[in-house]
Amino acid sequence: MAIDSRPSLLAELEEELEEEYLLATGLGAAELETLWEQGPSTPVCPGPTREIVSRFRRYSNAVGLIPADERNKLKTISARIVASYKPGCQRLPRLRVTGHADPDPARERSEPGFELLISRQRALAVQQEIVKLINNQDISSRLAFDRRGVGASAPVFLKPANEREREMNRRVEIDLASSCTCTEFFEEYDKRTFPSDVRTNPTLTQSERTFRIADVTTMVGELLTRRERRAAASLQGNILPSASTSTALIPVARRLSAVQVNLFRQCLPDGAGGINLTSFQNCFEQFANGELRLGRDGLREPDGGFYFLFAEFAFLCIDSVIQAAIWTRLLKYLVQTEEIFMHVYRPAPAAPAPFPAPPAVNAPLPAQGPAIRGLDSYDYRNFNAAGQSDANHKAALRRKYDGMSLAQLRLAARDNMLRAQRML
Image (cartoon, rainbow, N blue to C red):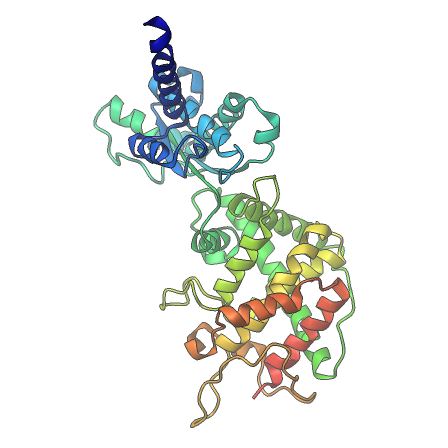
């Protein structure tokens, strides 16, 4: 009798251990049911999730002082991250860690910036606790933490009536995912680099906003000058030669390069500490093609002829030896998607000519000569779906640009400038 019952007891024990593992990784009953249906050979893979760790003490960022049930949420998140790195699972390397503060007008008046500071400190403390709980340097080194504090700009209770409500305001939100969506990516890009959005970015102090806007404004002037030089050279069949930026602009370029590369790593991680180049390419293709647009006020679509500045900044960084290896890898996608953008946002031809579809990839270039249109004539208001690239056209463009050297990309950028200014 005892011998006959042993397989049953072992099976029950295995089920109990499996349930404990699922609880540790945060998988729920529905995911457990799916696992049973899939069979024992299928790995248990957690999906994206969100946790809110609250009830920090007043003026404190100490994780060890929050209630045990709140600390357990960090154990759950950490276990899910580790489980996602199992063979056969989709890795979840992106963690957006957002710290919050309770509104404290008196402290803010006596110590301006305190709410933002304490919210940042709470986010950092939570990040450090997650790394500690993972206890695996190989995994934690591959994670893409997007850590920020937003002060008291988004309280759960705007006017808390008691200490418990104030505790709920003192929190850190953790969003775990494989990557940003392309919409999230470009929204975050604007928050970090587009002056009007930088001006209202709650994760930056006022001085940081002012400094960032000054950097962007200065760099845009340099990039427009380079764009116009490249455009003028293309009309004569010439390639703009490599040229470092000025000594005065090197620090500005370094700061803005770091801002962007950090965004790419945080939002589009490859799960190994780098940038997922396929995701980067897909997002820029969708953006250039007008697939993310809201259809009002130019939201989530290219800012006209400024689209060419993406590649110009990459060229500047490469030529100035600023994170050059990274920008060399990204340049291909920025030049490639110019070929998508220009056919969607070009000015419409004179009536009665219809808005043209994009030409075949590698179609003959227009003849050299004076510009028919300036690059500033490209505008979000010109959007026309007739000019969008379909899946086959995108695939053909990818094949064209795959394997291009830096010298070939300079040639392709010249050709794009010529076409943008001279196509009928």
